[in-house]
Amino acid sequence: MMGTVGGPIGQDTTSRQAIDLRVHRWLMIVGALLTGVALLLLSLLPGAPSEAVAMTAWVERGHSLLSWSDELLFFAVICWGGGARGLFGARKAEPSARINVGVTALTAALVALVVLLLAVGRLVYPVFEIQLSAEVLALVVSSTFGALHLAFLGFAVAAVALSWSTRAGLIGRAVGIFAAAAFIVGSFPWLTPSWWNSLVAILVAAWGVLLALATATRTQNPGDERRG
Image 1 (cartoon, rainbow, N blue to C red):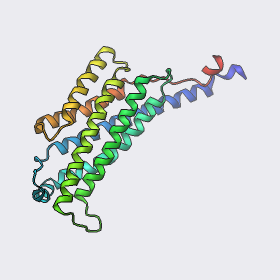
Image 2 (image 1 turned 90 degrees about the vertical axis):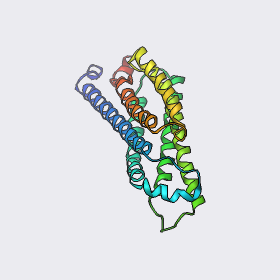
Image 3 (image 1 turned 90 degrees about the horizontal axis):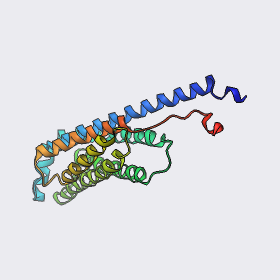
Image 4 (image 1 turned 45 degrees about the horizontal axis):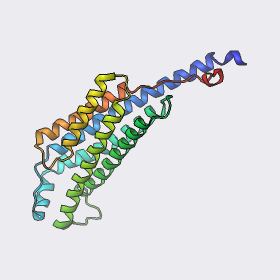
């Protein structure tokens, strides 16, 4: 029986693990790209007015951008979350505080995107045909940008913590630090110009793709533990 540990059954299990890892990488890549596109659409919105009475007209002008961004964010969170869970859950290394912090920060960013998804959805989809007052609409808009701020801060912490442990080595660390700095500046979209917000959105997608491709994982043969 012991002689069959590394046989066809063990090889089939390893093959399935490798396929699962590829699927999770692609899920994370798709999630990052969808997130980047959604954030890019939001960056194309005109500057939000400071007067509550002008919020209704602002939402109407940006209705198409808000609607498409909202739809993309739903699939982005599912794909990115599922892919990241599969990749980082497949690591066979010793527990790392840096990885734990990075995964927690990425989770916080995805939760913030869910809040952003809900806020934007309320702006573009009438619930029971309830019309929001100008003051309530202003609150929802400010909550939208607040959730976006939180998401970028989560991405910034994740960029430093997770990029430090990739197969890209020093290049990956440098990219992570640069991305984190850009995310922190981009977390104030109401203060930065539209072109910068668009650039940061593209950088989120690029960083997510790099993280998915460079994350070090290792499949484990079922017989490894027995041999140990």
